[in-house]
Length: 329
Image (tube, rainbow, N blue to C red; front, side, top):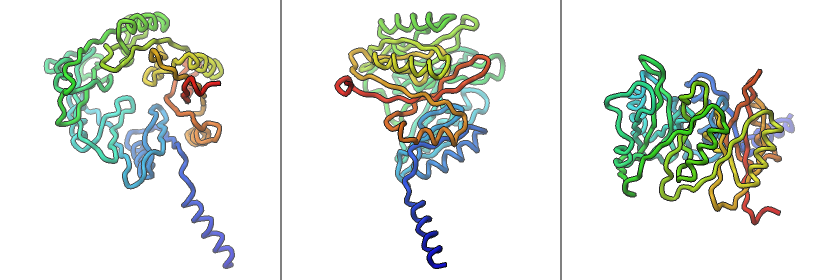
């Protein structure tokens, strides 16, 4: 009997002292249960790394200095949303626009956001991007908002740290669309704009009626120049081969361009880095988590989900590993 108790205590202590896995996966359901699950993991030191229909969190912090999350409140359009975001920003939360949640760092600062219209109902009080930049805001992302009347609108979201001004001087705000019916033609426009000093900013709504579009912004100091290519998604075998072929030339997927086509690849001119890729396909959170933490994935970092849409919708998780030219055989 005593031996059994000792064995149970030993097993319990071993389980408590076992190292936590590097990655955890949370299934995205309704906002509140999803954020509750995220915060349970965040208390152990995890932080959101990849958003999507599954959230991938990575072990990055040491309790009690941990991250916290809030579900984004979408009430009635951009004005109310931005006001709510700024209330949370005063508490140290930052808006992760692609994830639809807010994140508070272990040692937070305070932030505020503003937005200006790209498409949809034009608000009379919408600020001008150049004015926001002059006030110390920087572009955060692109966000769609449901409209009370008419179709949904799209807005640029800007952010600044409270109390900070634009100490670097004025930055030219110049955004150009690349819009066409096919990914290849969008990529040609992107490449032409890149040669003029533009870099990828985010996805956009095409005005071609069934087309594809992205927005390119004028590169700021220290940004670029970049070269761009694109890739299609047919199946896992084709995807991993194409990404690895492109990675040998120093081209890597733009994470924010994975969600929908055109799926762009970006190369910083003069960079000697090359990239290799793994692709995982599993919609079950527990199974995907197990594969992510497997020894053969060591060194590969998940960067985003990409979809193939046909008779079925297949989801692929892209993992990336970088190396310099001197490290290659």
